[in-house]
Length: 339
Image (cartoon, rainbow, N blue to C red; front, side, top):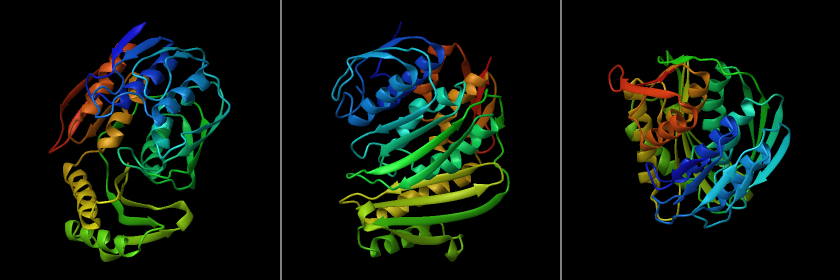
């Protein structure tokens, strides 16, 4: 039984999600106390409960203490069973973070699966759907498993109501190297609005253009979504390279000026571009688990986050696989799996 203090390291929900995924993969039970102890409102929120419910469903796990607000659970895994699954967060909690919990276990299952997840698809503190479909899954496909994601309906905070469908074609993981992102092929910045004033998108795009001043004017566009999918607002900045497509994002909320949101999102994209790194901040920590299970591999990335340090510590405890972090070229860093 592995005992985890959920307040250590990043101190958020990532500890819980990674622990559940690792438990399903290794068969090692765990108990975690002080869940989200590093957050202003500690304890499990609805999306964290759904993540563990999903892990328990696909893995035949026995879980005690699972409830909204709970600060401690114990998780005894069974065997991962592929199949058809449907999980609903019930709030705008991130569908992508629920997926993160079950992604690698189902990629390594012995047959195909189809999973529907309902909740938030474009919400703060989580990667948007486009990151999953265009950034993460094409990289894991290079490692063997083929996973496709389809967006059926957008879901914004606070309403939620989004829906994604994930189909898994499992395969063993093989090691790869993700160091050079290759030649820049395309770039675009898009403002999504649903059920809110369209001038918000114009103001955001104008702010982004001031930061990304060397981008062509036709790289910036707005997209009006059906009003019943809102209210909501998201910014997506996509840079497609020969070997990777990275997506930086920003999400509107009441009280946040459109100009500030646009400027902040554009600065994130500019920082990634200037780093010369393969992986941006979200891709950085999500590559760790598949790379560790492949028992080899290396990738270049931007500044190492606390999320990544926390995930590495958990992976090492469950699997014994270790990592080496060192300097890369220019502003990048290198993360390497050590056998």
